[in-house]
Image (cartoon, rainbow, N blue to C red; front, side, top):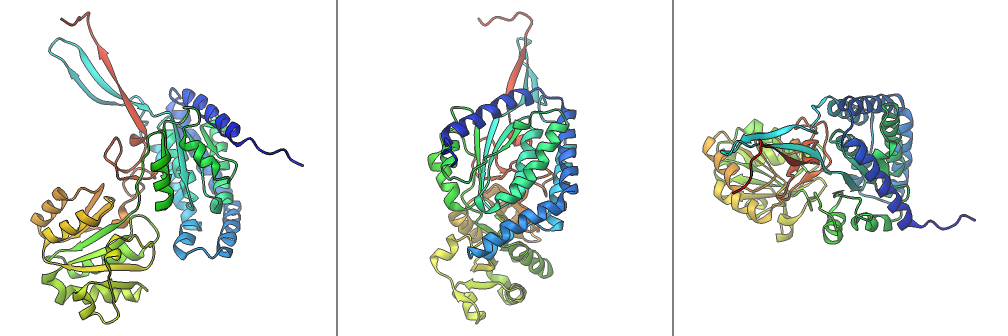
Length: 423
């Protein structure tokens, strides 16, 4: 009979190994980090059959639990999704190394020169649920930024995540970097999350949660280290009075229905009252044709018989499903007011040909990502040119929006003098 695992001791050992690896990575040759990521991409490409088999095992178990379609979609790996992971690793590998970059430089009246220079954060703990691609994104981004990472994936994606992690470790070892730079917690025991939130004896510098509202809320409530997080992606698309109809239809359908389970999916559609007669039905018909359920205000339900009357809760809801709440508003000011009240400060879009409306929308809405004439589903680090993301941060400290390699760095000041003393 196997002896019981001393989980706190196990997790503390993981943290200490990560700290030791971080101390090496902080000064690692940029070429070695690039090589590690390139070799990891090669390993994923070579072992894609094994990765698909591991994912099939996870999918079968998840389906047996009766898990939602949105959750299954996040868990699923396909050939194109593996291609995207591989491309993400190669893109991150090719990014300029951020460590040591001079962010700003100036000279003081007394002759001293001051530089603000990027430095790694240290050890990052990533707690995620069903998305196995987070393993690749988080491992690659943290490595490029000179950090070590401890990954704790959900039990539903355990086989997929371990298969991806194996490729990352192969890249590290072949490049001569410590394998402990990217560790994955070897147990699905939920108590491991609590240990990470306590900081593993001071070895974790930042926690990043990727998952549902319950997970993120727990992390924000219990963490004893800084957190990069968003509670939910309650995203809005607003159709202004000058919106091009064909664009409004295409962008709205993509924003809602491309992938309904991602955090950048539009959950609420706002339409200017002046274009209800011309734009409402074509947009709704296109959404319904894709299988979307409509929950509308009084104006919408009066014009669209299939629409379900929206309740106050609908304006607060991140559906993560083929459901959208629709409201008619008086003008751009009313749209801004609605978004400001209900938004989770993640991503909002305006469809319009009026520069004044764009300027006001961009100026007055305080969300991490604002788009003009584009789908909210572009709220993604890969689409921003970051190669991937470790998450979307909606807070206002240090990092906001897609968290890429630059956001995974801190900075320090380097001051050069010539013998100055302070009077």
